[in-house]
Length: 162
Image (tube, rainbow, N blue to C red; front, side, top):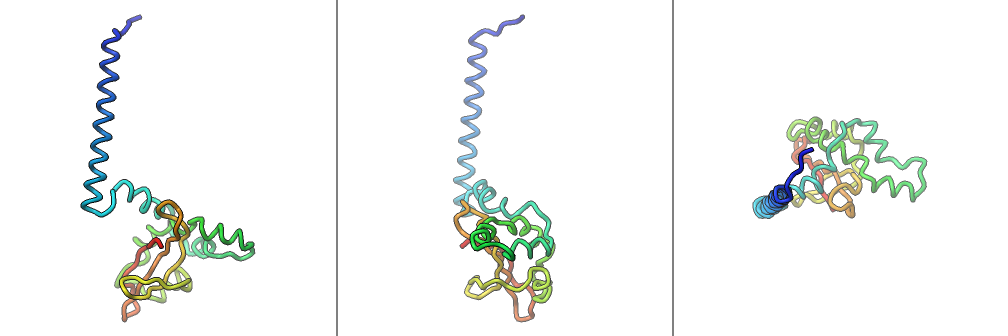
């Protein structure tokens, strides 16, 4: 059996620690630079604001069920509304269904149902749908908003935390 000298093993661990320290410094610098350039650290933005809105394909039936409190107590309904059941469908909706200048008001109503409330987006009221407490630390509600132009086609669409 071959034995490794203590100095060689110590040198290996010292180099490994220096490598990890260098990586940590690099990632921290990337976050700081990203915050200055993009307004929010990229990794933090990914984890807190992008990942909650990925992962499931949009299905109108699932969307409607996720927003329904039929047969639930007030407490169960509040828990369901907060749980972000619709959130993971948002990315698929935005990329494949809700196309600005193409999708009409009628098609949105057919896909998502009647609007649940309005939100102010850039000074205008836009129909919105509750997503639950999806992004950030899960303390605030998120909404999917769909703004329409005079031609009754989508002018802006996205999600907002409030």
